[in-house]
Amino acid sequence: MTSRARRITLGAQGCGGSEQEGPIGVFAAEVDGCPGDGYVAVRVAGDVDTGTRAALTDALERALAVGSRSVLVDLTGVQYFAAAGVHCVERAVGALEARGGAAHVVCPQPGAAWRVVSLLGLQRQWLVHQDLEAAVAGCISRQ
Image (tube, one colour):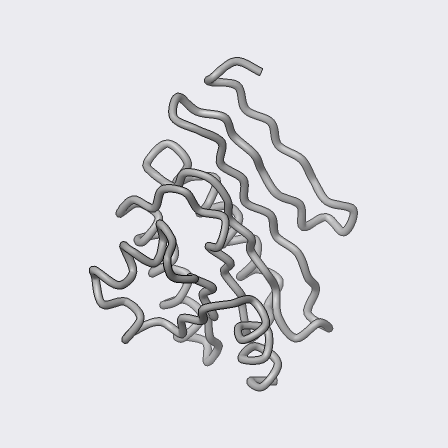
């Protein structure tokens, strides 16, 4: 693929994800889960910036549309986390809280996403977990 090519894939359960290659690096967002699981997971990897904001917004909106009370946003694979990504996650957190739900954000330290989250003090506003297991436990405990 060229540096500006885009590939979108759909998962077997219709949740799916998208992958983009941009001038800097690769971005991927995958939505997984169904309401019976108790939560929906959005796994994000690569560079999150203005060029990938639309794909991240789409993934988060699809996760919200499932209707689960909890959404797990896994930022473990993020290499670069710009303000555009913060805004996308903040909107999802707000939408979930407005309907009585919660977003559990996996943001391990050290890491690109953690640097931004900690600089902005978002770990005091969001439910931030250092690892996937803790986030899953947080999602399940809210059922």
